[in-house]
Length: 150
Image (cartoon, rainbow, N blue to C red):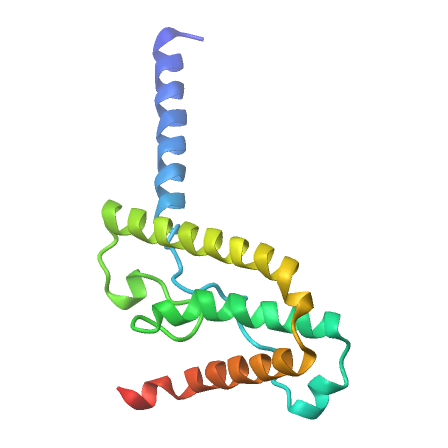
């Protein structure tokens, strides 16, 4: 191989890697609300009263996760999958950094809350736990009517 050929080959390889890196960056649009944050089923009091306390604790924690992740962002979006770009927020380094820090803070807060809940929530009265789940579910149902206020 001639030095000229090696230089051309190296240039092509570097161009390919650079192009791939920028292509991945472009598709890295950060989502404000994750797509897996939704309620699969809402319950009534009778259904909840028939459940074991362990299942109620799980339902409670799932609803807490959704509330922690969605409610602070409802000024932007009330449904999962919305990105900064789709809202018209400039895709700048500062905005991406702010969103990343916010998502990390939310995750840390949620993780800490769940650790606390795992320790103390089992001591809660079953009827209070049911009331809290019903309240959270009603709050989350209200998100479906959020746009009525616009």
